[in-house]
Image 1 (cartoon, one colour):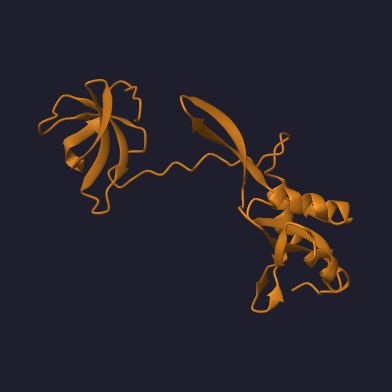
Image 2 (cartoon, one colour; image 1 turned 90 degrees about the vertical axis):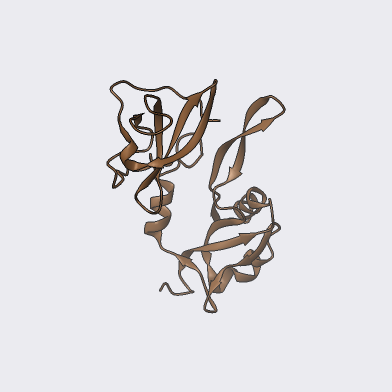
Length: 186
């Protein structure tokens, strides 16, 4: 644990929607701050637009010497409190801060890696094209979505009547499709 008399990074809780303001005010007071944000796609009417959202809603990181700057940081507009665990301030290691900063792109937004591909027990990967070989939908092509908890059934999307519909089928009722299937997931 870092000494409270050393320059360290701390986890800070902000008021709702005040992450940017709190980070800016800390900078104005001479402290380093780290406010992580992401872009999300929002729909308004028939149009989509990109908006900024906090990566960690209501939390930012600040670097200061706790013993010397506690009151100054605590009174920063936009901050609610310095987060504590077991009564001690939440000190964030420099390794964690550097790791987080390495994921911030040139645009200023956090960049996440692709999700790792998980092969299910049935042998299919999410997004695989499959063909149904048994039951009422025999002969239809589908898109594998997930394996159900009981490991005997799978969830798929079947394109019928110009709409993709989810279905649960026995895992043995599907086989890999010889050609890719295109779907609009609705």
